[in-house]
Image 1 (cartoon, helix red, strand yellow):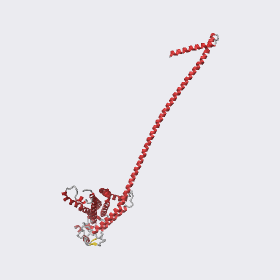
Image 2 (tube, rainbow over the protein chains, first blue to last red):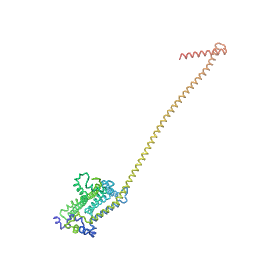
Image 3 (cartoon, rainbow over the protein chains, first blue to last red):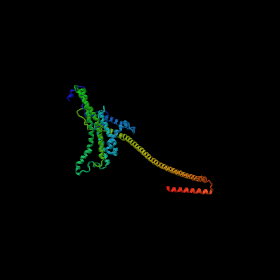
Image 4 (tube, chains in turn red, cyan):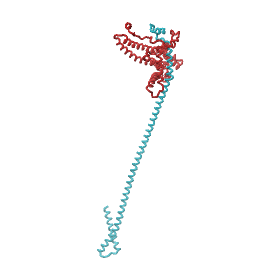
Length: 275
Length: 186
């Protein structure tokens, strides 16, 4: 802070990354509000994050609707790219874990989850968007709830009446152990799964954004505002920022894959005969 | 609290990132539903149709290739059969030709032998005839000569009946002498 204070006479002070980045001003539809919810929360409020998500969704729709129009038996370069993406989810996640029959049933869900998470993760490294749509809790939470509902639905549909018994009181365990096992199973299956899904995704992207902001804003500060020998440091921070950008692309892919594959695994476990 | 914090924009009190704003949930849900519908009803059916078409094309191609292969195998089979038949036929023909040739050779040989025998027989016959002819002409000439000679020696003519008897006796003696010599030679 003393460093910041000494640089105070410079035109640009250091902007540290802040959680406030994830809650920008609602610039559209600030009215109407819900009086009883979170201090007059706007119902249809649109801020920068929402706009970024809309852009990501629009790009997804464009790519996939246009990319699958007039498909040919022998694919063009663009078509094979689209097919490769969809084939990755179909063969690598859905059919691999659920088999072809159940995989086909849950394929739309898994495909949507994978590509929605991927697109909104990648906005974090897209210039001018510069923030992941999944770094704010709404999308991770909604998708976690979808995943939660999906595996419970799959379980109840497959084993009507026996799903909760199978999940909470697994067979092959001495009866007195149920006192311990059942609460543990309940917490791990029905409480922790959606929470971990939500937090894993959101925190990865949130921290990723904070790191990128830290490196680039430090580069900016060292180069333009700090003076003395500090501009030399900006080379290092810029290099780190570049490396972290690459890393963030990797994290974007990885987290999308993890979210989709965990959803598939939960469905697979729910469909399995016995636990 | 959260939105107050937002409105204070960068003051000490930071928003809690774990508390979702209502519009956050709303728009996230809307986006999810729209994307789900598009993938479910538009994109994935198109891809599935393409995959089915492609699988059918590949299966068709495989079937066609199998048919072509079967055809080729059948053709090869028939060629082999024909070749074997031709070979068998050729060997039969060769065999027959050899048999014919040996038969012809044997025929020729037989005919030649026959000819030779016949020619030999004819020659023998002719020799015999000529010998007979020579013998009979010689017989009469020798008789006449002998008579002429004896007439000149005796100085008188001998009547024909006596002379004939003499000649016959002489010749008979000659023949006997011949026979005796033959018998000694044997």
